[in-house]
Image (cartoon, rainbow, N blue to C red; front, side):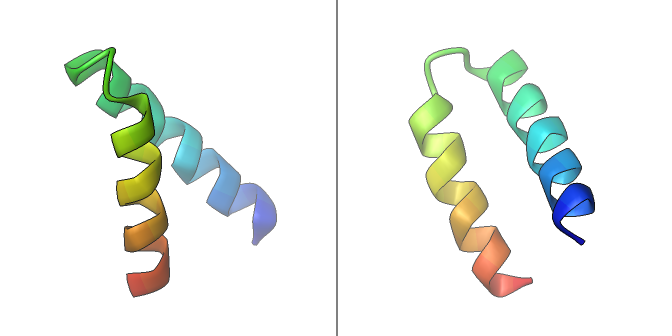
Length: 38
């Protein structure tokens, strides 16, 4: 489970980074929110 979660986070972060390189922190915050939702 931890591995799958980490992989999804890495993919999500990479995609978000590609869209806005200077939105790393926002991406992490959004990821945390989505994580809680899931």
